[in-house]
Every structure is written in C-alpha cells, then in structure tokens.
Length: 228
Image (cartoon, rainbow, N blue to C red; front, side):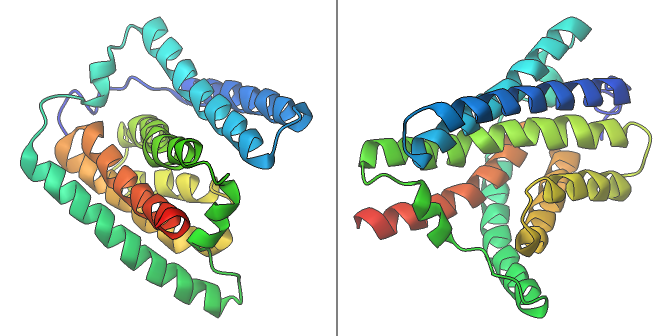
C-alpha cells in the first residue's frame, strides 16, 4: 500500500460511531417495515435501502467532518487489466466459494445456502425484481459493503498491522455479520480476495467490481430461472 493509504485517518472511535449510528437507523427502518401493509419483498427493500443508505450517508458525513475527500478510497483512473482481473476473481470466488461452503455445510450438517432462497425476494414483476436483485443486491449493496469493510475496517487495521492480519480480521467481521454459518467459507474467500485486490490496486473500484461480479452472478441465476 502507498503512503496515502496507510495514513492514520480512521480511529476506533470513528468505527464505533459509524457502526452504532448505522445500526440505529437499521432498527428504525426495520420497525417501519414491520408496520407497513406490504409484502415481505417490499419490506425487505425498505430495510435494505434504509440500512445501506444509512451506512453510506453516515460515512459521507464523517468524511466531510474529517475533511477527507472521497478520493481517499482510491477512485482514480480505471485500468482495463484490473477490471478483467476483478471480474475473473469474482467468477473464481463464486464457484470456489460455493464449493467450499457446500463441503463445510455437509461436514457440519447445515443447510447449504442456494439461490432458491433469493426467489422469496421476488414479486413476479420483472421491473421491480430487476431493480431489487440487480440494482440493489447486485450493485448498491456491494458498493456500500466494500466502502465499509475494506475502505474503513480493513484500512483502520492496516494503519498499524500487516496485510494478512488486517485482511483476516476485517474479513472475519465481514463474514460473521452476514449471519449465515453455512456461507462462512464463501464470505471468507470473498473478503480475503477483495482485501488482496484493494492492497494491490489502492482502489475501491476493483474490490466493488469483484463483489458485484459475485452478487450479479447469483442474481442472474435467479432472474434467469424466473423469466427465461
């Protein structure tokens, strides 16, 4: 990582504040979703948009308060080579992670995750489903999660520690917060891959590309199964 990336910008206090404020907003949107007279698909959309929108909003407020430009996350010139590498890395994580999670689930006698569960978040309306699965789950959620887990958590630890310890600790947080025991091998592989790509490129664009590639593949399988 370069000198800019290793600057001691984020503190533990920042991490705690951002996390707690975001969690508070999540609770608010969860309560709203409980009382609105809509289907669980609409409720899930309210929670996702509210929660992830709150996280990125809180981060932007902190950046402005600390006088840190958004370029701090490394959104610079895009290199075609790393775009291709990121997409290929996403494909690798998709298949290798799924295989490892399936083995892990069988060993522990867990129910393996699958794209079939995602079909519960569809309505049969192709426009809404496309927005819900491709825009929110495929692009927006990877964007926010990478800013938080790699752009803040990973970089906070990386300010004082080596790459592998920083990558492992931030990925453990990333994996555990997905609250799915069977998918731990998958999320561990995804988190470590994104951290490695970020370490090599100093750009969030490529980590988002990796993460979005993984999510997009799963969303495409669901949409393909519903409408093709």
